[in-house]
Image (cartoon, rainbow, N blue to C red; front, top):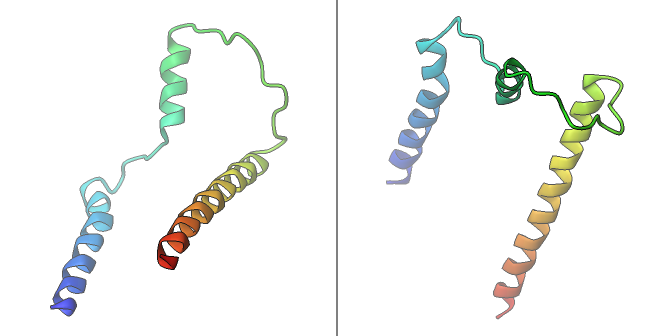
Length: 90
């Protein structure tokens, strides 16, 4: 029973990852940020203020974003583990 479950699960995961590549192999995938920026700039919107500090390169920006995600994951993981540990004691 478990082997069949894992086979079906693996097939579904493969289908989820391969289907977009087969449906649109030459499609250009871009993030929602660029689409939103293009939609906003077309309307003539001018920002109210400018950023206090801009990272010197996109690599630094990616590093800071990854660091923020890692810290958030650690905090969530700590509290989930803490609650699970409390329940295991009782």
